[in-house]
Length: 138
Image (cartoon, rainbow, N blue to C red; front, side):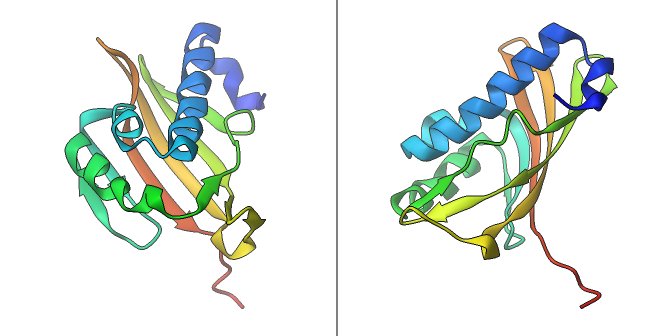
């Protein structure tokens, strides 16, 4: 657990980490509907290609074809840094890796930023940003 978790209430930390685990599980199961259900109805989702999807329906539709590809996520929930922004709002920053056809692909390594919010339906992601790891300095 990251030192930044100490300011996030334990119950919230556990629930947000469970939500992160579900993110990986639903992706790896190829379940676009369950994946999209982890987001708020009006969530913003930005892929590493820069594609912006607005709302749960767009997230679900955008992942249907993607989930037919042989890309699987490595678990990252336990390494994610959590930082509260306000009551019921947590910023999450984590590395992300994936495999293609079961083979690690370091060119796909990412930094992922999410915002989790406590809703009447439980914790959901309100935003997701995926950026490929690179060093523009050369």
